[in-house]
Length: 284
Image 1 (cartoon, one colour):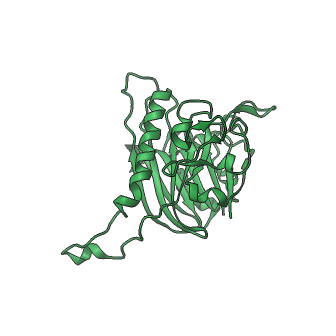
Image 2: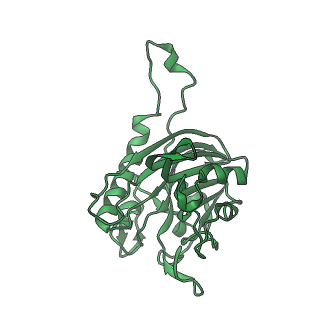
Image 3: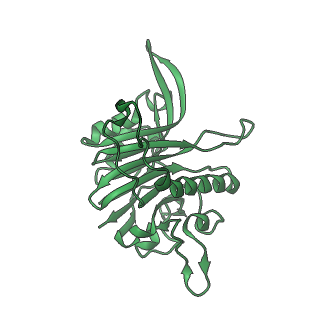
């Protein structure tokens, strides 16, 4: 199973040109895709629904758009929603989905946009999984820390809270094709806007021991990049020097401890379609 996370910068490539088809072409090998900075009906990107355009170009994918910005727009005599947020695409049906909104700093701050966490439950060849994608704040560690803690809280409560619809009801119309139980295993991926040497990373993946290195906590995540054998300080996904391919590792795929041994490889791909690079992880 091949999974890719990619901040697509709403189709704006390294050359400053908007081309969502070029974005889609960078994703053709994936079975499950987590996207950030995807939008619908913005002037800058050609007034198209980017999730629909990507799925049309790739063909055969199921998709959910977790819009965190959602604004009415009149476009050429019709009413549409100008949206921005996260998306999850899958070769297998997306059984259920939810989007959780993060609290945000007030409008007096620069570029203060609504962000959130999008969840999809997918029946994959390695089992039923919860798949999350998110785009944490770029403004400060304090806001990123809040986003990380909310994400962990959602993850930790998921199994106990159960599926999006369940339980008995006197009106049997509520009981149509109830979803399966919530799986314990999960993948969290996205542009988390943090680096491994910062304060937010250990909140998600556990503290370190001088003798034993990174410690795995059962209710947190494991970094798939390191589970594949890479060093924490390697694998930049946002290049400050394109030719040298050096920069910051800010895009991640994190997995629950039960999936750690299923991580077979992790690779930063090369694409011109965004200011970030796609991160691909293979599970077996």
